[in-house]
Amino acid sequence: MIRSGSTFAQANRSSYWRDGSQASVSPSVKEPGPSMSRLLRRFLVAGLLATGSAAQGQTLASVRATHHLDCGTVQEADDWNGQDIHGNLSALGAEICRAVTVAILDSQDGLKVTPFPAEPEALNALKADTVALAVGISPSARTAVQYGVGFGRPVFYDSQRIMVARSSRITDLSGLRDRLVCALDMTPPERTLRDEMTARGIRYALASHSEQGEMDAALAVRHCVAGTGMETRLAQSRANFHARASDFVFLPERLTLNPVVPAYRYGDQAFGLIVDWTIGALIEAEALGITQRNVSEATRREDMRAEQLLGHDFATAQALGLARDWAAKVIAATGNYGEIFQRTTGKLYHLERGLNALWTDGGLMTPMTMQ
Image 1: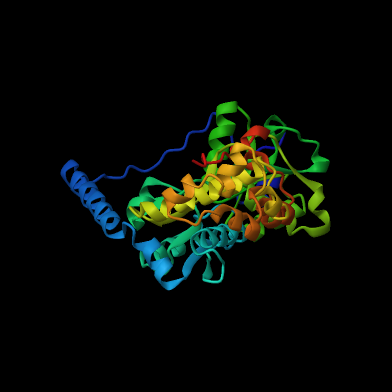
Image 2: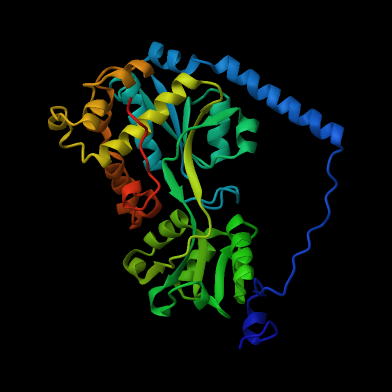
């Protein structure tokens, strides 16, 4: 049994025991008085509603008038701000940008994609009207109010997981009892790990790292038997192990569910509907087996869902103010959701579909009704 006073623990000052018997005491913070809190909330909500009124319809009209769409993606640069916890999904985001542009303009010629190092930078650009759409955002009420944005449907579902060396023969969380686990210091995954292990009564040692590179190195040399973080972040680190990438696997448990979504100015419903239905069309195309390669042939199909998607039944196009064959053009430009996932994320990070599989395959990806 390793104890906190052992030579091992003394040699690693960032390592310490976590078990169910320990309690974490937070310093008390004085909250604003009730009147001030209510006034502040009213002020923020009023500002958000005013922003929504001003934004109504402006984005779509501007994109059409200029034949141009500025779209931002999030790279989630390592150690940029200590808050963004996902891996780099900017390639996936860029494909969503492309799909929305084609839906509105019938081509991708007017698209400009700007990558941002982290979510706050992308959201500030959206608030300043530098971009009309930002893809790769973690939705929250605070973000909506602070930046005056609305959120679209998820383009990716991330989750906190634990990655171990295959040679450790650990197959679930219980195998981490009395073992050393790496995490980034003072991040949500570190706290979630503590809460989960405490709830399960599993005693473990924690090595906290201030930088992602340090944590990756500790995993690579097996200083830690496991590392925890968002699945995309861990998969990105694993891919950087190159020839040794296959030596590391995920445990089956998912500790959180963290959707990644597009964001646009709050109240711009016409533009937001197009964003949502474009994503839905990509998912519906995959469900129907319609791909970038066979979409032209699929336009001759006579089944109801294919007709609704590809323009024979143009009720959706008419409601959204789009060309009758908008979805067919989108699929021809980007492929369906499964093709996009594999090209930008699955192949790059050696990730299985998991939560991002179709609902028919046990995942969470569901289409919008094309009517």
